[in-house]
Length: 307
Length: 235
Image (cartoon, rainbow over all chains, first blue to last red; front, top):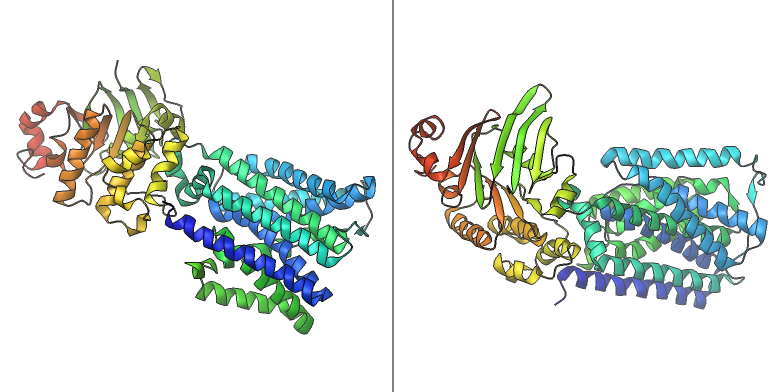
């Protein structure tokens, strides 16, 4: 017999798939360039939020460095497209693998410590990486502002959204399946009480290395998609919004409840995109106010509604 | 060969000596560790489990020096400790709490463990839904799922009522029949004595007594000093 939690996840999984499919249908029917772009950006942030929640939300190792891995995906796409004119699929693959590799380098020294020490390291190491890349950017012969006219996933924004939605659904399925496996149980065990887990013979270190590396690979993939959507890879891709928005989405979705990420992602990003049109720079302030309101009155996140 | 042997174990926390040159051996069966608060009981089992490192001395398990092994490696060798305060994995169901460890060991005995611990009918519930007595059983079920050879039970009767203590005592004796060795740290002497083959009394980090239950009961001085008179009269 399936237990309550699996049933809960199943419901969330189905709702999430339906929401993604609805966005594709709406974009295809309405054909509004702004709406399609907003939905595409939402999907990219959903990927980032999934990556963050998959590792940090489940294990309670709060990672402030995800924007670095996103930036690696953006830069790798720009560099490899400009230098070698690689096709889209190969660019996506390379960005993902570089994200995994950077994730490995980041994870191996950092997940040995816990709590605030890990969080601080997760902020400092990517900052070091970002500073390094930016300092050597021109030395390495890169364009001063960034790479323009990067290849698009598809010339048609609606078709690109379909491809990106497929990637979102595939990754959603991956996290759903992992959550249902023994590996997923261990991750939740790490989040609940890592000491108790270790005391009974589980070496948590390899689990953490794998989950953070995979998650950072997903962040790299999101970066590649972002570069192909905006057709630009610049220094702003290491920006704070690529940390802040995914975290807020993941927490609003329900920390560690990966399937709340989809509705939370569309809600937050579509709201921000439309607010930007009307209130400009006040968007961030309104976004912060709304986030505070939701955290106060919906502490379990959107996934709390599923139960 | 001894199941566990401690040689000259000392442990200091800052300037405070929690354990002073402790040496003891456990051949088989169940050993009880008693003593007043702050005697060093939990520190001693934590050192056996690898959750604390001794400041000096050696720990041997079945003749092998395990002093520097991390706790997860000791657990894999069969030394499993339950916690004084129950620590279930709150986001996992009762069944998942048990399966978490049994699957790692490649075991398929989760059903049996749920059955013998009486948790079978609660397997789909989350720990937060269980009464305290069942949480204590879940703590032991988790330990059993890791296929222990030596169980370190830290105050298993703490917080339990008379009925639950009787049930748990019966269960501990069943585990003993299954060939599990146990070290039990416990304050409730009356519940502990019927279960154990040997008693170790700790006080201020030193062993004050190490012998059989009968010797322990017959020792009037210990009775007077630590238990206000006769041992086993509802202590």
